[in-house]
Amino acid sequence: MRTNSSGCLTALVSGGSRLLLLMYWISRPVQWSLAFNNSWLLPCLGFLFLPFTTLVYVWLVQGVGAISGIDWLWLILAFIVDVANTAGAAAANRQMMPGYQQTPPQQ
Image (cartoon, rainbow, N blue to C red; front, side):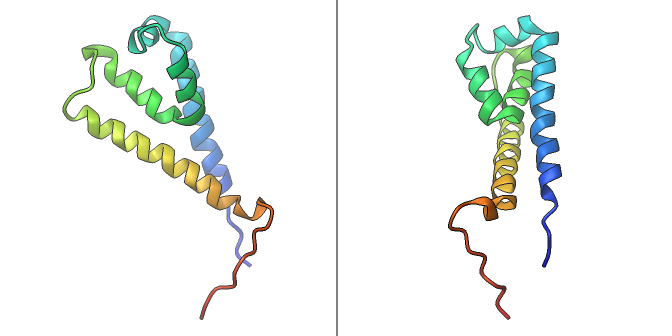
């Protein structure tokens, strides 16, 4: 039986992006508040659900004040990384769900 060892990589990516987000907020609070117009709800939701996308958004907004042009590509790629991270964690832990029955591989 093959074991799935992607759990450590998923934890590193998810924990690392949240740690970077927290460090960035502590080191540059003025830039952080300007990026989100002194709101606290959107950064909190970003920290919980889309940490890498939130981090990239704050980096992109820092100089110009708006997302335009090629910045959208970077933001979409960050969103894909967040979704892939969540999907990888779900796939790695699917056997923990009640009622899950693993089907044998077809020959």
